Amino acid sequence: MELIEISHPLKDHYLSILRNKDTDFDTFRISASKLSYLLAVEATKHLSLKNIEIQTPLVTTSAYEVENNSVAISVLRAGLGLVDGVKDLIPNVSFGYIGVQRNEETAEPENYYEKLPELNDKNVFILEPMLATGGSLSFAIETVKKYNPKNIHALTVIAAPEGIELIKEKHPDITLITASIDEKLNENWYIVPGLGDMGDRLFGTT
Ligand code: URA
Image 1 (cartoon, rainbow, N blue to C red):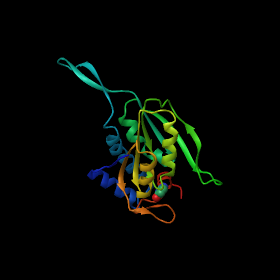
Image 2 (cartoon, rainbow, N blue to C red):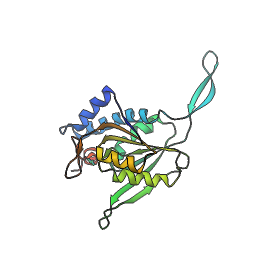
Image 3 (cartoon, rainbow, N blue to C red):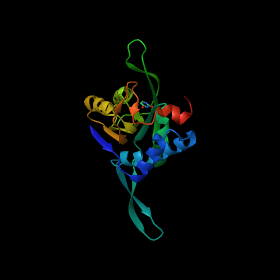
Image 4 (tube, rainbow, N blue to C red):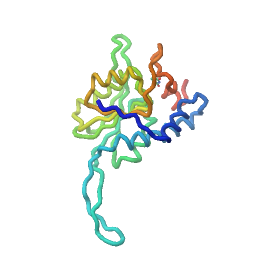
């Protein structure tokens, strides 16, 4: 598995706003959105280009166009907070949604919602901001792999070492991009230092 921790002063600025417990909902949402552009730029470095010819005001010249073969998948609900960067930067990206929950009896992850566009031979970007145990991201990756994508990039805001280890072991063929590798999980499976519950902080629930 390729692991990329992005390094950028704007990342440090917006991540600090997200971590601060006194940040209000509006500022939290806006900062998550801004961070999503930095994650999207890093995650799209491999996209393939088509050669095209265009007219400038002066001459005909060769130019480029990114191929229309990308899909972003939000893992509900916190993944919705990272939609802006991929939506605004990747030309004609399609969107899918996966809702993952733990089965009360088996404790295994299962999906309660799945709506996916065509994934065969696509660049797939999975949006899962908090990589804690890695259970739901691993489940989302397994779901996506059934449809034979070209490649998979997972975009996370914060990744715990425990989650990184699980993804490395189960999905060595993906690329994981994160704004921060944090210290650990606490006894309630929250990432430390972390930012609390991403879904609650994005949507104003407690
Ligand atoms: N999900 C969150 O939103 N926060 C954590 O710290 C762990 C999982």
